[in-house]
Length: 384
Image 1 (cartoon, rainbow, N blue to C red):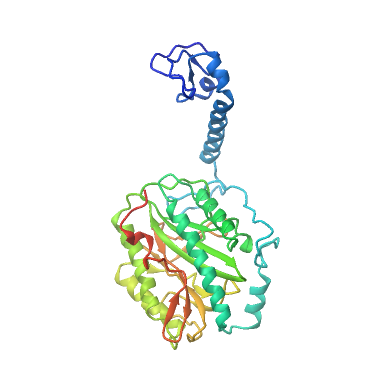
Image 2: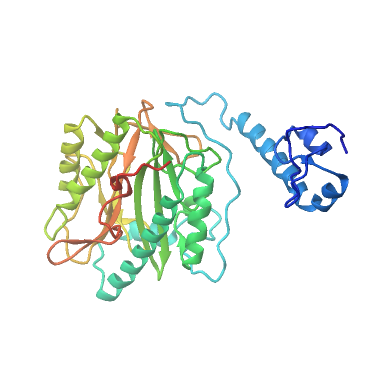
């Protein structure tokens, strides 16, 4: 036991309160200041089982920080913006009692049901009333999971921690996180930061003051998938980014106003691009809204840009997502070497909002809406 006397410190053993005379030698080696002082050998020994946990935590943090600082998975890769990939933790497991989609246990994550549907037909499925009820229930669960993730947001939290919260919330609600192993996607949700357009993989990067973050949630239960996402403001976000986020949500609102029987799917993109362009933004073309029910992705395809060639007319019982991805700069995108993370070509920021919709006889139901009817960023409180 080191015998350095530190007059200004008090023994850290609970309920002691005596002046510290000794310091833990392991703490000295690890450069731990807080929590390393004791009044006597007796206090040190009595508190050892709890105190040594501090050594383990510090060693783990040091190892992780060293790993992160030297992490470079793709030497020579040209990044378009400031964001960099951080290390990822191993894939999480889903208990065997929870029903799962066909790709969940496939070595390559292939959805044979989706592939069969695409090769045999482009028909847009009309859901029965019973199927609509099951889809509604699944969409309610998706909203519960996204709201749980939103409540955890703060400066310094990692997207890996957000993924853990999402995964555990899914398990608690006995649903499967749809992204997990979908064509080998390694996590339970998508977290897209700043210039990431979509499909960002949760990792150990802490969220920073001024970031914007999109969390994309999909869950599977009762044999149906739901899909929704929102963009969040982390701390003190600059005005240009706040305007971008607002424009992205307004683009979704413009699309929602058009959902009713008889609307052509190709017309949705005209309204979205018109509003984005009027606000100095662009619309991503590589990704689109999609049909969703028993299949994660299926007909119809719903491009978000103008003058597209989407096929089909809305009918009662159609279920699909609309999810415009709006960029502050160019609409063009670049794929990272993980084959998932899509970023803006010019490194400027991107924002997105998504709901799952069901066409009714008179309009539509927003199956993934918040109870307040508005997204989190409009609550007037920034995440800090």
